[in-house]
Length: 257
Image 1: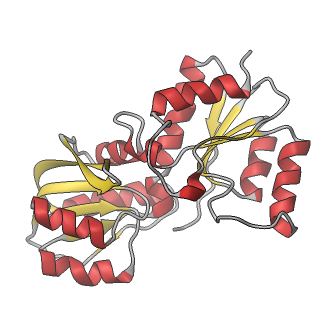
Image 2: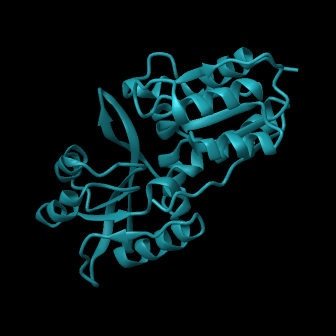
């Protein structure tokens, strides 16, 4: 038997949560306690009423999320927000959230696992956020079209659709980087250009990133925000089940993004 606090402390230590920089709404760690003890764990990418219902139906009373309860920022506890909180409390479901620490983790992280999913092995870090590298990088010699094809197979299996900035059919990838979720922005494009990265694999990015990429001799593969961020929470479910002695499962709730 394990309490929500004990499981949260274990995850905090495993993922290096204390002191890890993140966006304020992430509020990494235990976000909602319960009476407990933890009987079953469910992991998911996003916080929603659908996620809560799926956790309840799975018999879980501890929910691990990548985008937690407060991802949308401060809000009044009325309407849908009240309904979600009421369901969690009446069903005695605790909530733990972990954002950038999970993206960045060397073995359980979204970025490292995304690289592995498309057949790449990282040898360096990439993607600076307040002095911490979130993504991974490495070298290979592959047609960029082959990497895109691999990303499309990966994304399709998770309800998404990978696409790319304009590609020369003869283009080859020799230096790459991966940063999942909303990984394409002006900062990552500048870093890629400075470091000689020729291919960037991300979840998504603003329209201007597709426009800017060719000017930096950069190809960007957009493999889907949801798809690229399923990997870490799936890995956490396996870890919790194996190391903590608590049944755990991943909730597949695709958004199409």
